[in-house]
Amino acid sequence: MQSADRHDAVFLEQVLIPSLHAPGPYNVLACEGKIAACAPAGEFEAPAGVASIPGKGLRLFPSFVDAHAHLREPGFEYKEDIESGLRAAAYGGFGAVFAMPNTSPVNDQAAVTAFMLDRARLRHPFGPRLYPVGALTVGLEGRELARMGELSEAGCAAFSNDGRWVTSTEIFRRGMEYAAQWGRLVIDHCEDEFLAKDTHMNEGAVSGRIGVAGQPTVAEALHVARDVLLSEYLDLPVHLAHISCRQSLELISFAKERGVKVTAETCPHYLCLDDTRLENYDTAAKVNPPLRGARDVQALRRAVQDGIMDIFVTDHAPHAAHEKEVPLDQAPSGCIGLETALPLTYGLVREGLLAEKAFIRMWHDAPAAIFSIPVNNFAVGDPADFFLFDPDSEWEVTRETIHSKSLNTPFLGARLKGRVLAHWLGGHRIV
Image (cartoon, rainbow, N blue to C red; front, side, top):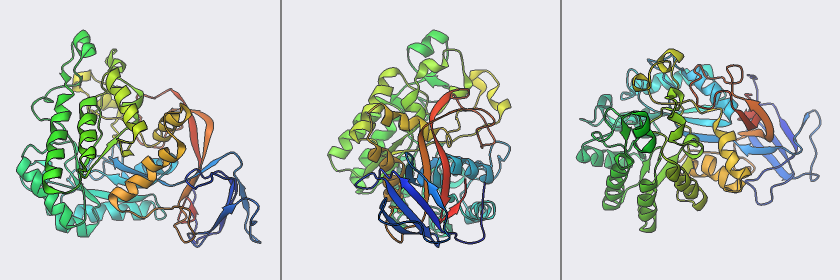
């Protein structure tokens, strides 16, 4: 990682910027942490004394937003901490990371929020920027709303009970209403408490064949339906976390056709893997919601292509090696994703399933709009937050190439195509 004690000028030459009307090539100048100039290559050169960084054939993307990650601090620093998690985010192309509240103590008090923000500023003064997500209920227990006003004032960007479902519809309704008063969204973990209890993978042919208790897709879809109906009734927005199945997509599509203020996210692993990945009881592929069947994967890919799915997120969920090196029914759910997310989802662009502008929209434009955070659109005066991406660079997922503390990924050992070569935030080079 590199740092500096001032805002140095940065000049990038002949880069492709797919988010602009004409993809390029462009020259870009950043000064004092802002975009100073961005124009087709040849219209201006590097100012005197400013070194030129060649970018021919490379993409220059605005720094992306991960609206759903688990950085584990406070309380579980042996899995990940804010320093290592944000470092992984920097190498993954993310300039903003939303950290979920299932820490210990839970982020249900302003003091915990302040601690997280202080740690981020101390360890990464130039970014990536941390956006804490406050607990929707006290202790994530689902019985009493947290002090949402205090959490919002302390810096929480949204509210969620992620990892724990809110059984009480009345409490969830009040949470949506109070969040709206503070200009915040509720991010809901859609999972029926009773149908999902003591399950370890998707319910289907594979779970039946290998003898593992499975979670049916309706466990997710039931709560999606509840949230859609509440959103319509209250005329308030709600954001649905890590959508994984076809029934949920049908409900979301129906809601959007009716003008309901619902947005939704999915993760790279739900688009690239199905439940056959667990045939050998691979705990690295145990996630929640679980990897679904092939039909669900195809439905998700179509939803991404058709614009029904609003954003990508990583749901980065690190666990220590010893926690995953146990039988499937004893292993925690979750996989890391901050450094593999872009190559995996750029694969959809390579396949022709997703245009490059749509790829950028789902990682940048849409999450920024949904959660109202400032980002770079390469206009003069915008923050100089961007990274160079080589779509053809191949690399192997190993301990040496991953910057997270943990290595729990079903893509360990895989060769991926597409890599972040350099990353600037506020004009400072952080990778």
